[in-house]
Image (cartoon, rainbow, N blue to C red; front, top):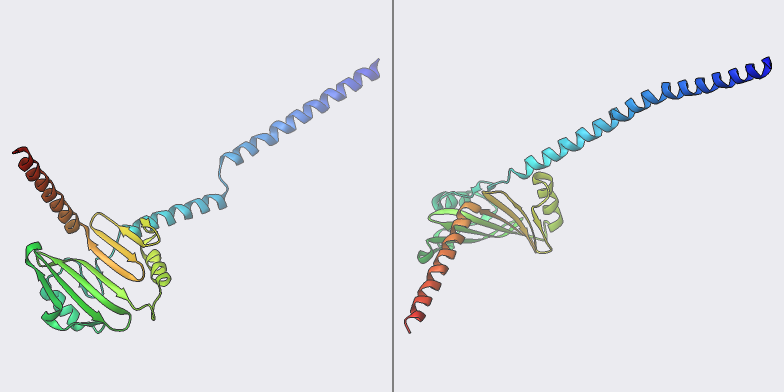
Length: 212
């Protein structure tokens, strides 16, 4: 009788020991699961920092190529083109005026990496500039890779072009190999004027038809 009682007591002690051991080890495991491992935390911080860096770089698009800037005047553009060895600027014969649109065009050939260049001015200021590059000296992939490294992934991408854009500036790499800069403030203003003119024309047409 005493032997059975002793056996029962021993079994109960073993069960209590097992339960105590489970409770003892399960507490630290839960705490460990709740707190991220140092390596995981460091990796998360690195990803967050990289993402912030990409966003910051993508928001700082250039408004110039070498010494030529969006917004510069015609005389400044002439001086910059004359002083730059990449461009074969021949003076006023490379400048065309469009009085009806209040715009000027400058089209020139280039040397070395630049094959041709095109500048469009509105009210005397550059708002579009485009550079067709020499595919024998530089390729589309190299230009695209360089732009991604500087300004992050493009906002828009298709087989025809890659576009980086902010509220004030658009930078586009167009196939086969042209880099284009656009002042979006001026460009959107022109679009708005065109839309207003088109609406006015539609209204005049309707008024004419209503006269019958």
